[in-house]
Image (cartoon, rainbow, N blue to C red; front, side, top):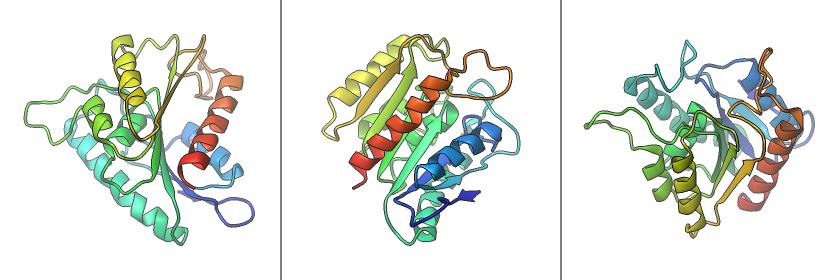
Length: 211
């Protein structure tokens, strides 16, 4: 679903990859937040059922990644050219890191899964390996108390980004968990101030990297 700014020409396009691949209320909430910031936001619906890293298949990930890569060009055409950023959290953030050949201009990955249960002949790279080869700038964001992403993988990505010539960025929000940005009812990890800061942080990053 494409959500345009309420007024004026979009300053850029954002391709939003849902955290569980299926379009849900949290993804729509985020898309509307980006539209209020002046972006044209295309929120993708990549799977008929919500998926987690524990039950998604490699086949589903390959199909979702192909759709993400295809959608970059579709969004660019829809806004009449211009820059495109990819934003994703959890599995969506993983796909953002894997979408290096999509033609996007920057990506923001929020609490992405950095390793996947892939077979030897998988068509996919591990996200950490993919991030090392990306030419587009990366913003990677984590929660200090994230119990889903191994700390050694977070530190490995931080080291990789610090050594990149693309002026990548990494930030860890203190005192918050894996779902700090997710306003779904019943989510005890949700922290509204951190969520608001996250949207502003992504906006500043894209403004600097997608001039």
